[in-house]
Image 1: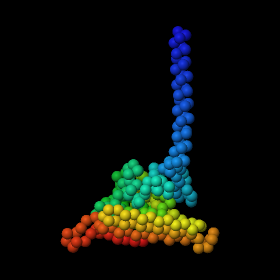
Image 2 (image 1 turned 90 degrees about the vertical axis):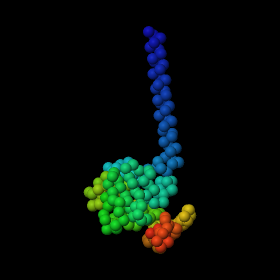
Image 3 (image 1 turned 120 degrees about the vertical axis):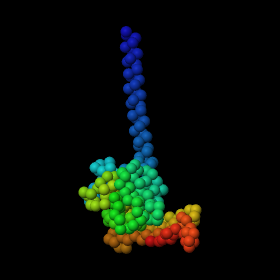
Image 4 (image 1 turned 90 degrees about the horizontal axis):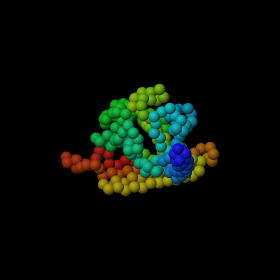
Length: 237
């Protein structure tokens, strides 16, 4: 009997020691991940409209948010590329014509190239509602963050958000002179270039930012009737 009790005691002690060691190992891994992986760092959102930013862990929404570091880590090019990293969300372009949004969240969406139609997923850029589905899914750059809210958002954002909302925030002008550029060449050929310059006009008082964008696309197909390429080949902003 004593031998049996001794065996049980040894097993319980070993279990306690293994649990303690496992917990210590997990803490170390979390510390390393949060310091070295931008996808696990804290993210702030503005969807609550409280005049400031809140941690994504504390807002009462079904939300997926990305800051500038997370977008860089994902090699972000446009909002449609985020569909692969979010559940119940499809941020695709309409296949009929480039640039037209075919967004759907939790099955609520609109697939059309008629600009006057109002969708079920609202898109807001710096708090301003984009009231058309045209020109939404072109390449985006120089962004501070993106928030995708799943489910009806009518209380805070009004109509056309029965499926959800996509909030896009661009970077603000800086008080120090900064510049960045990106150039990309793909098969087709397709050439994409963008650049941003930001800095003060009057130190500590007035800041300004200039952003330019260029795209050349040889087209998705060739029209056998007139030999033309895709509907939108080149655009700049």
